[in-house]
Length: 163
Image (cartoon, rainbow, N blue to C red; front, side, top):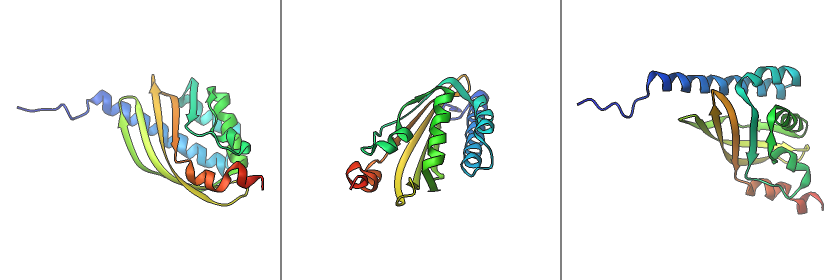
């Protein structure tokens, strides 16, 4: 008796490979854009083939300091994604943030990471997060970031930033 219920079909393996390729290309494009090696138009040209036209980005975080809110607020569509990246590249300096763990499901990729960054040339802060990418027809339709908000608020709360 040969039980293959825990092995992936060729179709599933191919789909996982396409999702992983998508993540690699998007990660490389985001790094180049953040480093100033490519401009916003080139960034959009690179990632748009992998994004559903109505892609949705959201997090579980509404910062108390208003200047941080555009980084974490809900965005819809390619223009919304681009607006978020532009704000991020102006106001967040990433020090560290490579994925630690990655898992694949049917039409989803999950990854965890520990990110260290500063905002608005402020103090470095380190936090954990998990991101879920949901795919529809081979393109990213949803990006959900679940963030451990306590470390960020400890450094960048409204009360601390306005005193």
